[in-house]
Length: 116
Image (cartoon, rainbow, N blue to C red; front, side, top):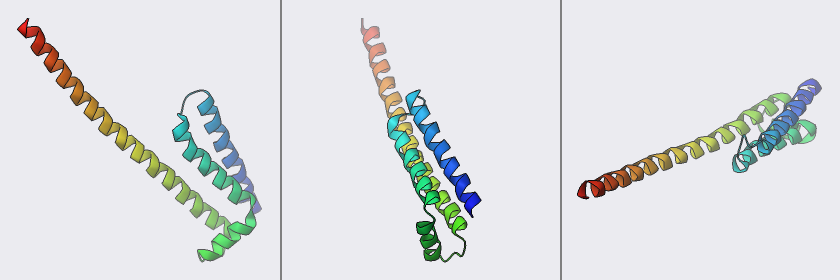
């Protein structure tokens, strides 16, 4: 159990470090990094505190705390991926609307050029 918790601690620290490095280098925007930093902090806290992890395991009906940690990791990352999917969908809709507005402006400009 301790080995898995140690591995999860290291992985969560690597995740937090990678996100901070990416923000510093402008590879990821700050508003998108918040969810990844939150996920990393949740994993770090759970891997460093076996007491709450055992409580979560008993609430989920599991006999093994590391299994509860893996389930929580999956849930946290599903939430982050869902949030990013919503952002991508909004950006796609905004791109479509912008392309349509640009097409209208080009049509009106071409129509004005033909009049002259």
